[in-house]
Amino acid sequence: MIKDWTKKDSLSVVLISLSAILLAFNYYLFIIPNGFAPAGLNGIATMIQYKTGFSIGYMSLLINIPLCIFAYFLYDKKFALNSLIFSLVYSFAFLLLGNTGLDNFKYNAAGHDTIYPVILSSVISGFIYGVCFRNSGSTGGTDIVSKYISYKKPEMNFFWINFTINTVVAAA
Image 1 (cartoon, helix red, strand yellow):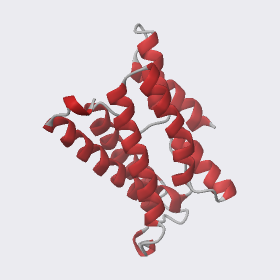
Image 2 (cartoon, one colour):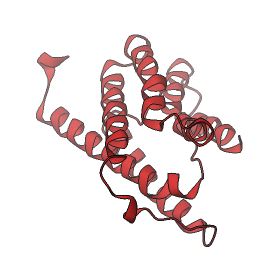
Image 3 (tube, one colour):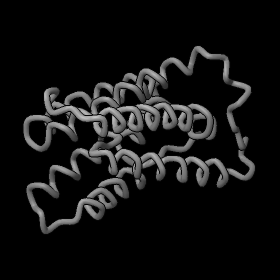
C-alpha cells in the first residue's frame, strides 16, 4: 500500500485529518453544549457521554478501531486506513479540546432557539462527510457498516443503507 502512495493520497490524508479536527470542534462547540445527539455511532457515543461522562473521544476509538480493522480485511484497505486516520485524529482532537480553554466559544442555546446549533452542526457534518467520501474514507461507525453491506449486496445503495441505520440511531 505504501509503495503505491501518491501525492493525491497525501492530499486525501491531509483533507481527512482537517475534516476530523473540524468535526471535533463541531461536537465540542455546538453539539455537546446543546445536549443533542447526532445520528450514527458517534451519536450513540454522545448519548453515552451524556449519561455516564465517558468521553466521546474514547468511545469513538473503542467503536471505530475494530470497525476499521474489520474493513481493512473484509472490504477495502485504503478506505479502512483513511477511516482509521479520521477516527484517530477526531478522537484525539476532541480529547485535546477539553484542555484548551475554549469554553467561552461554545454556542449554548440554553433552551432558546435550539434549532440553530442543530442546523449549524448538520451543515458542518454534511460537508465533512462529503470530504471523507470523496477521499475514499469515512467518519467511521455506521459508514463502515453501510459500505460493507453495499459491497456484499451491490444492489443496495450505500446512502440508503446509511440513512436507514442512522435514522434508527437518531430515533433512539
